[in-house]
Length: 275
Image 1 (cartoon, rainbow, N blue to C red):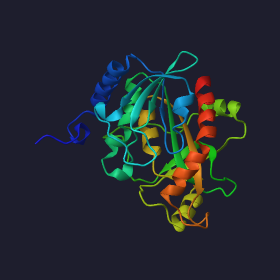
Image 2: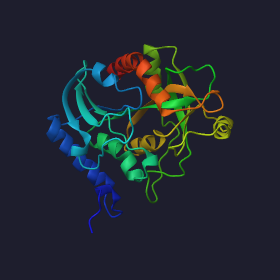
Image 3: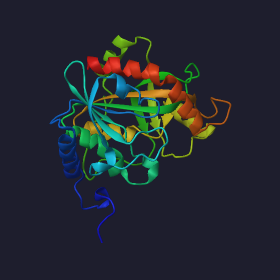
Image 4: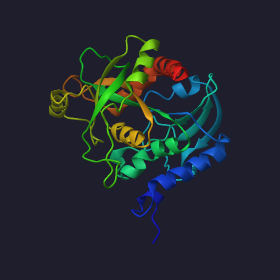
């Protein structure tokens, strides 16, 4: 019996499927190679309209390995954008989250596909909860490092990858040339989909975390395995449980993203042009 999804077959080669997806993207967009890839999380989608001229938009589920997004606030397209500096950006609006229980291969397929299109820089964005009380909803923050609390990895077998400088100091410095006020912090990826308890937030704080969310870390590991340079950015949509005194809701996340999208979209667009 065939598997419902090609990446669900344990005998399948996820890198071969990513290469096939990249070839399909090239054919559907008419662009042979992309230089930069962006995964746009909650609140960040406006950047796709601001970074340059979109020359092709395709439904992600027309490309092998991709699925329609399961989260309200995420678009389900792949866009090829011509940047003002002549480079090509692949904008990924279809993110598979770990909590969807489709397996890590499907979570990181977009990143591996981006690498297969030729992209050397991977920009990973998300909406997340903040632990620092000085951060207010709508604050963009650079990711300096992460703590992977999923107890999982996209690496298979005896594959050893150094993560010492996973989130590029060079790219963070470039971002600060655009906005010197950008703060940074350590991102903690929880499994989700439930929000963290106040005790879990305090645990994250105790082990060195500043940002809590449900994406990005696994994708970053896969990007490093593929040899990409990574810039991570979080939009603080709310203070984390126990830091914020009111209950958390996905509607709050969406609203914070909507209120901030013009500002952070313009910021990210200015950063991308400098990379």
